[in-house]
Length: 110
Image 1: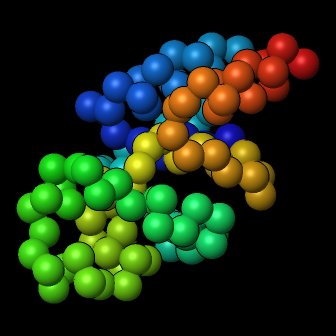
Image 2: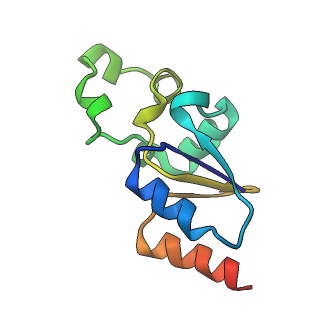
Image 3: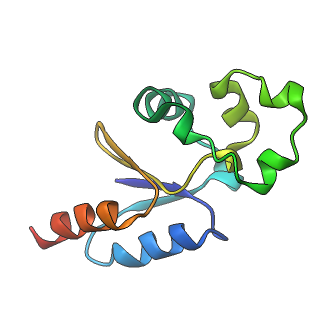
């Protein structure tokens, strides 16, 4: 399993803390980015929800940048991605809401 997030993100910290019984690779998107194939698959699954339009990064973009192709925009500005993005084989989850936390708690329990 891989968790793509930011060290400064509260949701990412909460998710990482919750994975105490599971080995999970952490990838800081600011430092390492997100592989193109992972972004493509995430965009297919989550669509526009993958882009955090309430982020500081989004507010700092001009209209031309905001109009870019979503994949290219996320490659250029990986901190625009909603977080955490957790990849478990071919399955992905986005964010750290109670339903996602419960899903991974069930996995840890089994």
